[in-house]
Image (cartoon, rainbow, N blue to C red; front, side, top):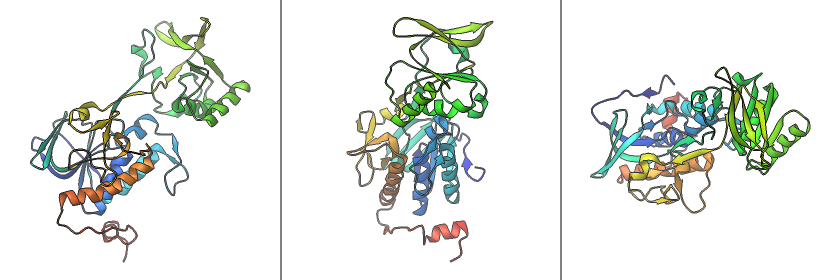
Length: 351
């Protein structure tokens, strides 16, 4: 990380070939694909660390569909991407939300809430689902405990070892963390509002096996109220479908009700939208505004699949389109990484 520059607020606009909005996996890989073509990039992200939702929401979650990596943790993937782009010396502007966007005579003015502004030749939006907030636990008096005894993400799984845990949710995140934390927890109870789960069937089957074996409990219920003792959280009560109130002791409550995804300021940039995503073509991954491209979960097109793998493909094709947009007279050639003089020179590979 020390070799990748980060920004402080500056008064004068930064003149950039490309500004990438979003430092998740697709945004970071976009740096690499542009770098192979000799194009430098600045990366802006509202989060204070690179990695986007991978690092923010599930850093320890395994990913299985990255080529040549049979299994890879989300944070590990981010670390590998950061290592991969180091030769291209990208400028990372972290903790900066883009709040201004104005096309200016074929270029683009962008400014962040932190006071950094850009004069860019092209823009790539790789903002994932956009800004997001977790859906909160709907019981009175939770505010003092949020970020402490009540969490909406797992920041450090090791710290939860030996604790009495209650997990709320029925999707993949809830089931994945239930199965991950169960062996190390003092006790674990899963609560979901319905008998059906939205998680992968294999995960649900494994969870039910653990319940049948008496290793954990599972309730169909809704949260009812916090259980406090001398101002400290000691558990939570739930209401079952028949109206019964059940008290669950807990030292830590983990809530996985999903997110409220919002495009945020991007929604006001005048770009064509479809179901809260940016519409792009599949040749250039360009939006409705020439010079502005979108890769990853933020975009949509016929046949779109929200996979990291697909986002990497989009970034590769977008890079060539960006090169043509910036330098239309320049002859394009495919930069094979196996014979790339750029990579050989920057990584010190002998000819």
